[in-house]
Length: 92
Image (cartoon, rainbow, N blue to C red; front, side, top):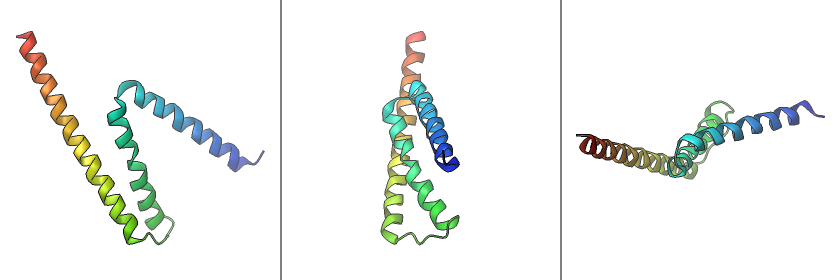
C-alpha cells in the first residue's frame, strides 16, 4: 500500500487510456512514431530537470528519432494533401 506505487499504477492507467484514445482516432503508423517522442522528453528532462549527465551517443539517438518523426510528419502532411485533392476531384 505504498502511495508511490499506487500513484505509479494510476499514472500508468491514465497513460493506457490516453494511448487507446490516440489509437481510436489515428493510424498506428502515425501513433507509434509520435510515441517515440517519449525518448526525446526523457533525455531532455533527465539532463535539465534532474541534472543527469546524458552521453553524446544518446543525444545522437535523440537526433535520429527527431529526424524520423519529422519525416513521418512530412509524409503524413503529403498524404493528407493528396487525399484532400482526390476528394475535391470526386466531389466536383
